[in-house]
Image (cartoon, rainbow, N blue to C red; front, side, top):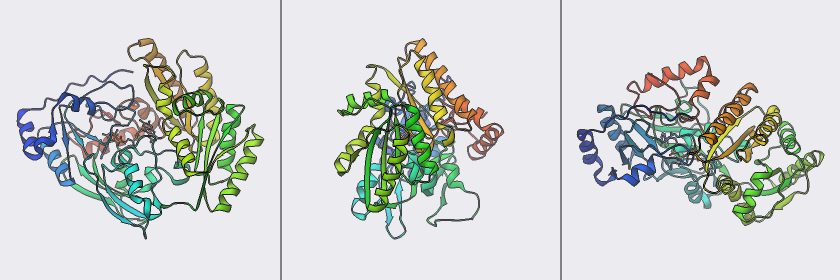
Length: 466
Ligand SMILES: Cc1cc2nc3c(=O)[nH]c(=O)nc-3n(C[C@H](O)[C@H](O)[C@H](O)COP(=O)(O)OP(=O)(O)OC[C@H]3O[C@@H](n4cnc5c(N)ncnc54)[C@H](O)[C@@H]3O)c2cc1C
């Protein structure tokens, strides 16, 4: 993959002085702080900004943006830096605006099942806060990401098959635009036919259209009964066909995750489990006690027809937490399969009827390759992930990962799918987005230019302009 070599925009003394007056020691130009903000959790090289501004409020973000706009400095929003496609890299230098100090939960309305938070609140912090209310927020990317970053990447996770993604769960936003204007989009009403849906425009825009400073989210009641189970299969096809039949039968599973035999081996080692090293599904069922039993019985019957072995149940809350933590740690577990390697994570999503073909063809590619890559996925949505374990200093590793990734995405697009179900585009998948969106890619560029005519908002990501 080519590293972007766009010229850096110099941070001049005048801009630095203005930002220092605004922020004092909350403006950092220290090497380690800049390095930390120039990298995500993947193989993408570190590209540090020239300065990092730690904002405390929407008004402060607006003031910082106005300074940057006057000096035409690139702005890179930063939540927790857990994204996977180079989204936080400062490709042209500039100022990273870190919103992680914006950690206030502004309002919880249990009677309306909604909440408004500042963008730096993380998903775990929110659920901790909600613990005594009987409510929870279900979207759970593996990392404890910020809700601003999750909105910006249109994140999802293991619960999306039942509760949707950030697209379905963000009701409204406060956004600072590229000229410093502050706007509020959407609201608390469950439906609205009022005008363009700007909320959905900003959800998934990856910091290229504005900085999200507040997010209003849907909440859900904690189900009366929850049970989780693990089921190994004799074959990948058996496991995936079980998922397809479950979804097509309309069984409202809350979670259904696929892990191939390599990923199971990695999880056993990393999370100290002793599960069968076979293609495996992790399930979770939510509902009333009777409802959960019924769902489990129906899925159990489908699994048996497809060569599923015994269900192993995790009924105690602590056993369920351990199981799902292991699933969330799958990426780090995978890295352990090749010590010293970097992870090149990638994801695609296909219509559910094409899932088995997509995964089986991908597994054939991997079997014929020298690169190691486990397969894991939120398969109830048709979404699956690979992690190529690469040594970025070895050109042959990077060339092979590029080849496999190209084939993966082309396969997904051919099957009516998308180049990324949840990780986003960053700069790693820009070429694929152009291919996927066709004529609409130009319209995305028009939107970008209309909202950010100076191209200072996270330049070089998502859509190519100028
Ligand atoms: C182990 C692991 C597992 C993961 N599993 C999943 C998963 O299951 N599902 C999933 O969807 N993702 C997953 N991810 C990816 C990542 O956690 C998500 O993309 C997450 O939403 C990023 O949030 P963040 O706060 O870390 O954002 P960052 O990495 O800080 O930023 C991501 C992008 O959003 C922009 N941005 C950040 N904050 C804002 C803001 N306030 N306003 C505007 N733009 C902003 C940034 O400029 C950047 O382009 C995983 C990552 C890891 C490391």
